[in-house]
Length: 287
Image (cartoon, rainbow, N blue to C red):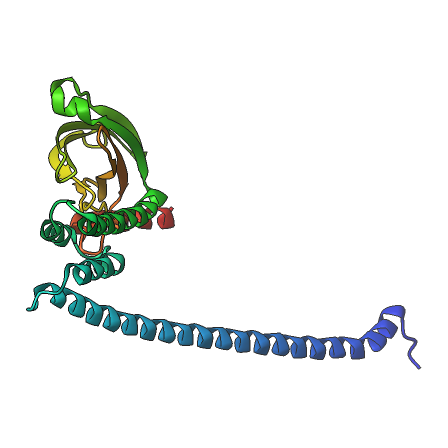
């Protein structure tokens, strides 16, 4: 009988154990693979159901907003003309629900003219409601713009502006956004106490990458909302001047500098800006 050495004996002892371990490994691999596939399938199903529910919700909301907009807007045009109280209510509904997609300043101004000067408690109440909804909308939009943008505040001496406009000096601030630094020079030119509006000259100086200087003149009031009423700059950027307070002798304004992606839905970006943004996003991925 052939005498077995230590290795042969070890092979006889370990061979069944090796087969058992192989079978166990295959079983565990199959179990975990099956569990992973089941979890992935469940996750995909949940994602699909969530996407379908979200899409249905958005469609229902779009239909509701469309019907609401048509009904509210029609009330401003139909005859007989509704009361001022109803018109102010409809203006509030329009502003709170559609301020990101519509330029509502013409409607605000139209309604303000219909209400007339604040000669009694009723007209003062209507004008206060209009100003309140305008302030609320501006505040909401500013919260969105300030998330990715920059701003600075300025106080304007209205008495000096009316009596000695030549002595009013511009406010200049450098601000940087998305790697682009610009200097903003804001100069008040005139004031309309009745309409509660200010006229400005805004100069935007951009030293690089391409040196340029933009100059614009405009009136700003409580009904000029920054997502809608803004100045378009290069590289798909915007800036806007917001009137925060208007008192007898002073006014406070804010200049906000923000990406074009934060502008309203009606403010479509230029084609070259879209291409430039896509190229910026592709560069990190290639690196």
